[in-house]
Length: 330
Ligand SMILES: NC(=O)c1ccc[n+]([C@@H]2O[C@H](COP(=O)([O-])OP(=O)(O)OC[C@H]3O[C@@H](n4cnc5c(N)ncnc54)[C@H](OP(=O)(O)O)[C@@H]3O)[C@@H](O)[C@H]2O)c1
Image 1 (cartoon, helix red, strand yellow):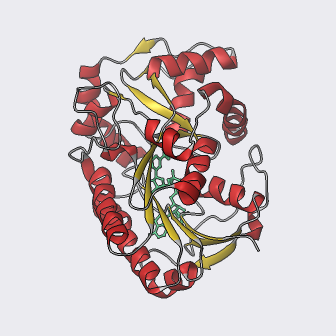
Image 2 (cartoon, protein in one colour):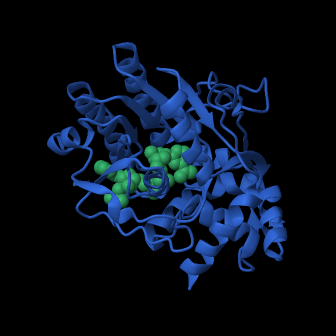
């Protein structure tokens, strides 16, 4: 019989792709969804299997009974549920990301559970300047509620692993792929939209969602208990990414680069715009604005050496992602 996976965040961007892959590989998949969640996950351009086969457990990260039945008997619990400052206030971010994780671990402790794979963020790591690329050891002072909540959740995972539980933490970098209307949409717009006036001055490690799914499965199978693995992609300045997207799509990248000083100054303004119009504007406060001007580059060497993790170049993720982007526009 195949293995049983319990997935929190199954209705999200990464979670949807993970569930598709698990089903395609013969796992029995249980997914947590809130009563309000959109379970359709309609991404015609990317769908490879039918998410209708997910057994849905309706509740949230604060519903102990649902969490217990979700995780009990699972070989692997993939805990992906989380919120960012895009969609929630700092208090909710803390509650969902930290307390939600505590509740999931509590259910795992009480149940019959194999391994927990927790999805944190590469944002809890930052290079101290000695190298261009941050790795797992570069634990950084969190900037903003999102990073702080994820760092706090990581400590809960480490404690779980140190006290008899089996847990591994992965740290994806900036994920692109079909179904993501935050980072992916912003990145594609920089390369594709004639109305997009500018690119950002910084850079990021840009990883395709299918590579992150590979990494999640590899961490479940081969990760060492209590360890952390960065799951990154190509390290690119936003200029480089935008022109490679434009080249691929036969367009022209946004011509002007916003000066770093303007981005820092615009941080609070962007927050106001978002509050009023509901439009996601990047970045949204002074310290996070500064991050958008930096090169947030990461090394995935540890995951490569220990998990066999590999990532593809940006272009190999563009066909599916562009098909979804264009589909979503119409
Ligand atoms: N996308 C990236 O670039 C990136 C990079 C690094 C790390 N990550 C991490 O990867 C994970 C998945 O990210 P994503 O991009 O897939 O995010 P997403 O599309 O926003 O999905 C978030 C998921 O969490 C669920 N959720 C939110 N609040 C919840 C609650 N109170 N109880 C239960 N479930 C709740 C959402 O359910 P609903 O459908 O009901 O809203 C959704 O399924 C997150 O933990 C994120 O921090 C993402």
